[in-house]
Length: 540
Image (cartoon, rainbow, N blue to C red; front, side):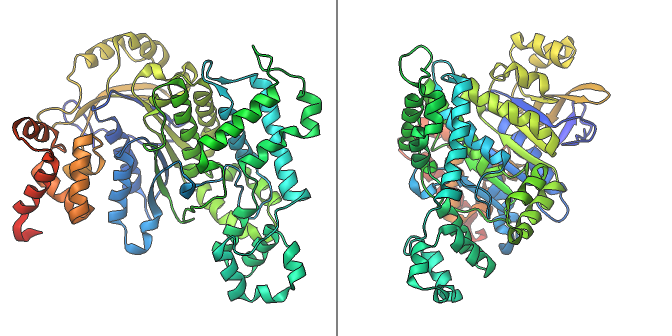
């Protein structure tokens, strides 16, 4: 896929032991092939795997990652298709993923879970004018204490009581297993969701036990209501919000209540579950991302945090093995250790694409930066992609050890020269090269910069992708619409094959735009799809 300017193959080891850490940056303007490059690198990981798919968490805004997932699923036998899933998030109760879910079998969060909860709650308190929470130090202390109080209340002091008819799967499992008959009505009236969870788990009804587990967790409205707790009022009751007479506790309560209204997908009990056998997860934020205002960018940033947790929140579990085993009852150890051992033996990949949508919200970038620095200890390959090099904070630029540069600005040359030791003559020569896919099909120019233990390697390369892959990964609006139209009629495999045969460069945009200008038609794409199908004749 990668080759030098003279056509020689150029091998790159992803997550190589020749590098101290595995942080990759991929800036590039729209239309240059940035998302295709990132997805193709992930595809190389997949094709290089032996028995199992690698663990990949992909957070995207657009179609490209969903195309990768479809390509993988089409290559898997029916019994393994759940190993790769694409999720298009929607901010409604049907897609609820409770912010306060903890590991199955536990009653309170382990360290990475608590850090995630704290990050999202603090993000809900961000002042969009500064990109930071008000009174950052005090706010984080309050949030951390609030989380402790919530789980002490709902995990120890006053666990939620089981109520029949709340979860149909749980009720059916209790009846089918005979567990319901083992206790009288008085016992059931006082039983908790934790007790029901444990009973079902020990009886082997794992799916139902997981549902009971979800019902036991606190929710955002309940957590925010605990801001009136005496322990918080005694310490922070008189602290005012910076630049205002408003009490900080009142501001945080208002911010969390607003978060409950703005984000129903994190404010109730979890409704959708991911198969524990799933290894490749792509989360599309297109339907939940905010607009270009500061408030909209904050919303997008929060969604990136949530999606990262959904797709790869357990990647760091091996580092917390002892804490997990201490937290969980012994009967849950087998399930937890199976997942931990899987994760511990492999390199995991976490991709954040289109991050320019969170530009200007420093708090979100700081969280990603913190994750990136910590994850190098956990064998996690992190890819951060955005439009411009200037979108990355200085700390991220300094810590990255791989760059995939499809384009940059002349004013970026000092950063690349001084931070990454790329020769200035090479930087200037690359800027003179045509950008995007070459007309002759020879590939897309990319400047690869690799910090290895022995120094820095910089090479001007080209990457090429076959037509079938291009049509799976292409995210341009017109091409995506044509692919979707054909897929709905013929299925994804046949649709890609027809498109690849008729448009081997991976795009029909020029033809679509030409016909739109020539024809008096409201649906050029539908007509083109029908024409391509008729052209197949009996070959369909």
